[in-house]
Length: 112
Image (cartoon, rainbow, N blue to C red; front, side, top):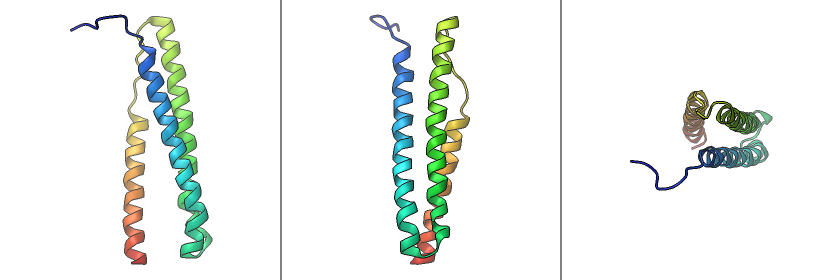
């Protein structure tokens, strides 16, 4: 099956880049809120560490989305086959999300 009209191969990567940037922004906001509230609610400055890790993760997401976007554009311009491989960022986000979930369950068990 072929597309009925011309296909712009850059639109998909543009949407993906924008969604990763929104995800990074969301993680940054949630992490900053955690850095502000967790030490107050639970006592101790050590509770700011999860928020700091989240801020670093959000910066990493922004950087990776920018890097992948530029690699895609350069490859598309050079060879016409705009494929950027690598599932490492997706796997890292999945593992990070799992660890955050386990931390939340442990925190709920500790507090509750």
